[in-house]
Image (cartoon, rainbow, N blue to C red; front, side, top):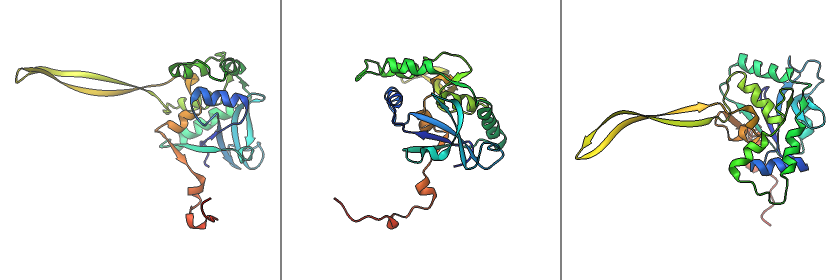
Amino acid sequence: MEPGDILLVEGNQRVSSAIKYLTQSTWSHAAFYLGKNNKFTDGMGGGSILIESDLKNGVTTIPLSNYESFNTRICRPIGLPADEKEKVINFMIKSIGLDYDRKNILDLMRYLLPQPPVPERFRRRMIALGSGTPSKVICSTLIAKAFQSVNYPILPIIQKERTILEEGLYRGIKHSRFIEKEYLHIRHHSLFVPRDFDLSPYFSTIKPTIEKGFNYKNLPIKGFN
């Protein structure tokens, strides 16, 4: 992992189940990677350090090893200059100590039923039902705010607009020539969920098994059962 990477986690708690249902995703939690024994982690202890927003402790630092037994995925921002990446990292560091937005979780649990009658188009907005207090955040909204502080896109809303250049007749049929442009609208940070970093076209997916040099011939496979 590199500083600025995002670790997506498949949690196994009751709250995690609510988030996975509402987002229709494997990922229920996101944490931000600071690095290992570098200038960002000075005074935070040795080893690899994450920043996360936790229900019990708020925004805090934890060792990466806390998630070694979980199903995870690494997402890395592409094309982000070193100076702007450092601004994102410093934003996260300054956020340490903020409270977790418990109202957001209470709202989620209110909808945690065996088959809650919630149309899919409303599920994302249910995630944003928090207190709205700037000093209270959940995991994915904090990370989204950090990247939006340098205008780095995550999963923007795409709006297409057509502009007619001219109109005329061709063999008695009216026609028009037009150009179509796409505009990216920044989605409010409160609407981001962990899976958005996985779906984003601007973050690459890092698979440690492949990065370490995968060779299928070295796998201890005995045969099919």
